[in-house]
Image (cartoon, rainbow, N blue to C red; front, side, top):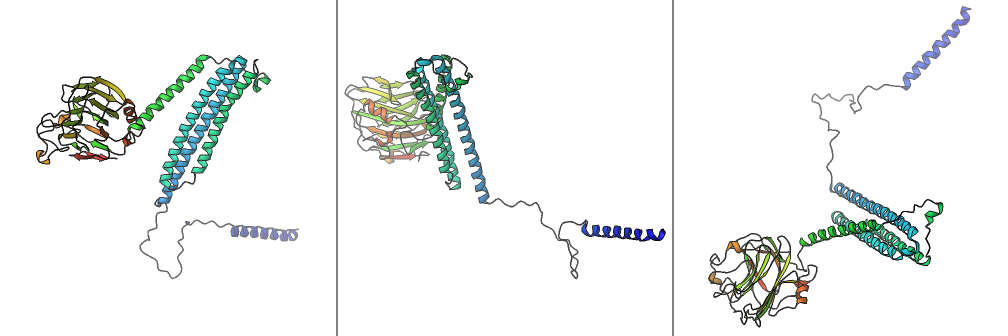
Length: 457
């Protein structure tokens, strides 16, 4: 019995030993580091450890990485604006469609005029809002194009904008179709949604439409204010240059040499002014002689504009026409025949006085300045002036009268301009700077800045 079990035991032990050896061959546990530290035979050991580079050192960002980051940010912003515009259009057009269907279901054939009015107003407002979003997107596109010098995404975005415009116009045409249905069917019109009996017969009240129109009017007012603020940052009336008077100083002014002699019996002088600060007496335009330094003056005083001919006794005053930091167009016109003097602000006549220097003729040979007046002795350069009579011009200028701000579009004619001509000159979006005077023409007549005054674009 023992001899028969002995071979079985030997076989069992052999199998176990074989399995153990095979398992150890398949799995080897490596407790070493993952770094390459193998030392070959014969290689001398170094006593000083070799510094290893820091594994987490960040590489410098190249200009291409920055360019790709800007492109990604621009694309994300444009996608957000497109999604926002799309959501606004879907929600507002959906609510408009539901309200119009309920309105038609309630009033039937009598809805023609109401549908036409409300539909047109809503479609106009939607298209205006979409155009505003389109302008914002175009500005972003131009900014991104300037940074990346590439226009690869412009065509795709323009296609999306055109699709949005098409969708709005399609929705705007639906109220017209609905109106035609109302007019052809005098009875109540049943919309498709009412077939299942799920349409609620709600009456769209006049208060809701009034509230909608009021909100749209508020939005328009805000947009007009923003547009007006943007216009103030640019030169008005198509002018490309302006005179900058940076501070109030008796040394800062601009002398003007007229193209014609100033022995005039009638004239019109116009200019654009954007004052930073206005004192009790701030001079814009001044012409005078040794005998009378106040022959012509355009003066600011607070919010008032003053115009004098022949001396301060002949004064024309316009109240509440000037504000600091705002471009204002000011004109003064005078005729010696009846002594009629008028003052204009932003194209509107704000003051009119007869009997001003009637029969007077302006003398020639005086000095003409912008931003200052020569009120004591000598001539400060200009028509018939002598440069030797103005040693530093300290004797004839007063710092309290100096203008601070910008002046552009200075023109003078030897006649009285018509009301229509002055109104065209006063348009900020117009081309008033292209209409130059024959006595002084902005951009043609010699104007020399003195002190710290300078021309700017």
